[in-house]
Image (cartoon, rainbow, N blue to C red; front, top):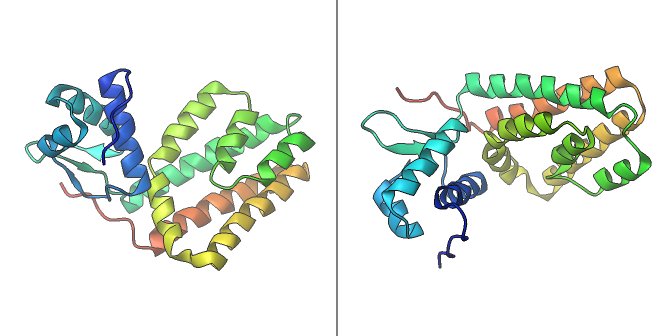
Length: 205
């Protein structure tokens, strides 16, 4: 049963719900987002729904071709490369910001994390704009990362979690160049899993 929307800006609430559904796989890349059906499902009028879809389009999660309605954005090989290469730049910048901030307590906290590993690293940088930009960028591909990880099985998921611990060891070593190289390899490997899972496709015109 659909839960009632929270009592704040209706367009924000609709965008939050749809964003979460896209990132959790409720709506797959390429799925149509039919306004009439969504308005009925969420119990809202078309106005806040369209505002929400426009917001998600700005975030790169939704596309709205003229006269064809909204649908969940697919990930083209070019966009995957652009997102990954920019993530490398941002994450390496975060590592440079971490110099002098990476305490034993922070390492202990990171040791317990997997899904929130990168988000916690960003928080440690004490750089609000970095957190905002990196978060928006990663949100464009979060659901693809999850879909690519789904077939891994227990051993594969354990190995994926271990890559965060290996990365953490390099960061803790204090060797910035080695940490930057390890971060790039980590991000490139995640992008390759998406490509190997055949989750990219050329956007239709």
